[in-house]
Image 1 (spheres, rainbow over the protein chains, first blue to last red):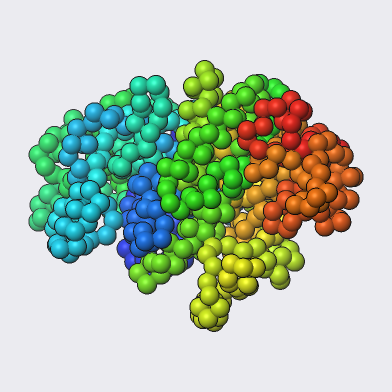
Image 2 (cartoon, one colour; image 1 turned 180 degrees about the vertical axis):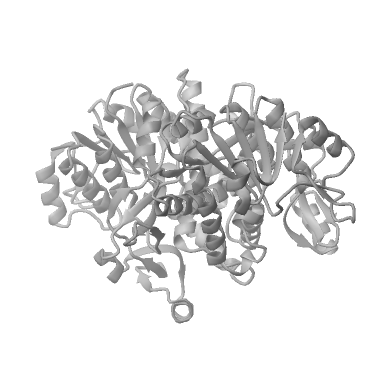
Length: 312
Length: 312
């Protein structure tokens, strides 16, 4: 298996149904369906990364609800915990899907840390909402009591915001390469990786932040020399003039054009914009092709026949 | 690094202080101290396994406390979550300890599944207590409402009991071997591994059970051809007549003698007995030496000069 790897980044839509709070089995079914779409990558070294937004919010809520009897979990611990749980579910579903398809490739999930820069400006401007929404009074009480920074999230109430610094280095990159070389399907960089900063003596220390999973996926994809970065989400294409009568789906687009759309504010922050930024980052760093589409279209998209195909 | 691996199994005492509920930083400090004791294994392929008893209890408690707003987490999910969190903490502390000692060996944590037999008699006799203790009335209400089986734990109240079936196969064994071959310090088989049973079609399905971490460590140690299995716990030696005037520490003991002591009921179930059983299992399956001692004595114990040394 000497072909160049494919990195597939799974968004929330691919691993957590909107109603995931009602049932864990519904989540498993969704992951199972997503995994089945990935068996057509059976001839390629395959790294699967994934988000953890709803799950890390749930972990924080569970921690809050037990804060009278147990220590509160810091955010790095919550991210690491979701890597364990989601890594287990994804590895199991990938194993099943590949075996059912007659392909003998074991899946293995790695706990992954992502180094960020302590001087990243994001630490001065926490902006990524996480966890549940609170009413204003409760939010103000929580900010006073815990030092959290909270902001009003349009229409949803007040949510905690945390820094989302740029990923600089994937600590487990070498381990990922080694396992890919054995033919394993590797699950890693969950939730963008556990965010750590490097101290002067080289020590890595966890921080209260979250790393964007698409940017972290782009970083690891470039580092391991992936040929294709595929970001799977809830829409078949990247669109410009999204939701307007002039909406137009992008089929094949060059980085220079996509970057221009981004500068014009075509993509929603916290939604399509980070995906577009990740794709541009990957192609700047030597990637040959990036794709944004749904899990259902991933096979055709790998062949260049569906989704938004981005080329250098 | 072609020497035969050493497997080090860390018990609760090595990774969670008795008062761990009061502080997460106290836990980190303890793990850090334990990791520093392991740098003397720097010349050997090293697999570190660990328990998760207190942590999985905490995860269940957090899940319980949030059951009005979030789905309850099944036990396999809790075990997987603790593998993520503890794997992150252990890998970080091991990295720091090795770097400080001037040894360039990255640590990497793997999510690990352990296959158990659906026909294991343990499923008919759940006996492993997990999670918090309840008063009798609340325990009876919970059993009626949730289908839990609960038993009175001497002096502590009523606790949920779950099956603790024998580990049969470590799903990630090949990945563990591959990573050891790269020189990485591998953290795996946390909490004995996420327990799964194999369906007729090969599918692996999570079950509500916990696997004894020492037995799972013995299994993986034998499978990867480890020379030494070292079980680190809170006592320097295995003792017979423990707590009596005739107490005697075992220094060097053959399997046949240790097995005889076990048959005579010398070792407490749920405490020293599973460690002794694990050691015997490892040596039966081809291991050359097993040691039970504290993290502090592990260096001398590796040299054969401390702890209880068990030989075939």
